[in-house]
Image 1 (cartoon, one colour):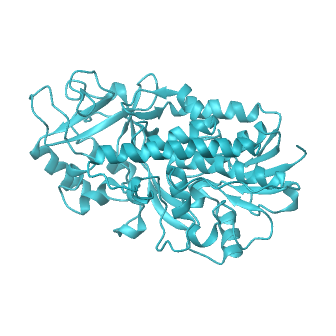
Image 2 (cartoon, helix red, strand yellow; image 1 turned 90 degrees about the vertical axis):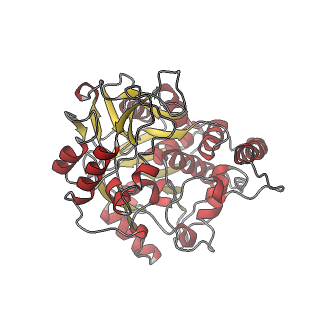
Image 3 (tube, one colour; image 1 turned 120 degrees about the vertical axis):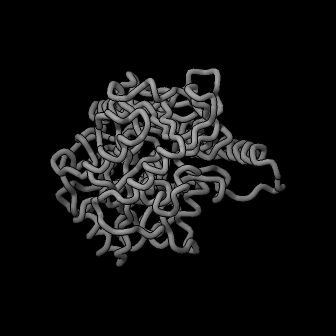
Length: 448
């Protein structure tokens, strides 16, 4: 196909979109500002770099995250396939060795003859110097450059583009005290377990929380709930809501038994392997805004981490997103711009790694349909990502914040099922049937 598409941003969404379009014979110019222009959280210039957790969430079919992965597989996602090739043990979750994953995606992108990869910071995605394009996809992610954010403000008239997000620290495995930590996944007593657990007793937990809430922060102000996306609230902000708040959330000890005492700990911090070799571990749920020095001091109060060496400190940064309900059509096309401009990834107002991959893939289908001069069918609302698209682009949605797939936004079942497990299984079964029909439809139209 003698068509060209410009994609701005080589993160999860942009990389998936580029690979999908190239697979369909569309010429792609993929622009990425790194490493020429650095960010506060990226480490290099590879494609699809994961800057927060290395977990892509649950694979359980009866979960919303599991539904989304099944949908991505049915649509032939290339990044989900890459995640499978770089998988590390994480219980029922899909976690990856982030370096292997990013290197794999980068190799696929740069080795594809239909993809022209350019390192440059784009301030105007419609600038003629980028090359004539039949469509443009903005996939610049949560750390969109100030210049491009200003372009969006100028085009849409909206200046509500920012919220705060945070990432968790990573510690070196050989600096951990394995006499204190124990390996166990929740509710799995016999298996070795994929997580390391740091057990608190009440006294050590109370001391830790006291220092956590008193520690110096990079951004020196108390945050209100509206300032922070709920899934990435810093641990100190959670603790500031009440000393027991982490113990009933990130640090909940349920399903764990400390072999040193034979009892459930008062609280526990879980650590998840960052790579296949298990040489580094992520502090699960410990996104933070503390200064580096305070992270070293306070997090070393966690049992077993008294000598922890930090491979990466946690960081807090600005995330950029558009008000999707007012600015995006259901096909992810940006309103108010004459040229065909589509938005994918976290910039579009979706949250989560797999959600970013899905939006890049769906952008591909919508753009490819436009190039073929046909109408692409909409993803059914019974599917996990179809429900998210419907919610995120519904003009009736008020006070919008970035959203991930969840059962709360799915269309209710025709018949209410009281048992939660059975209800979730019914959602998944219904979504699977809807997805089968959708795949058949887009295949018949030559889009898949």
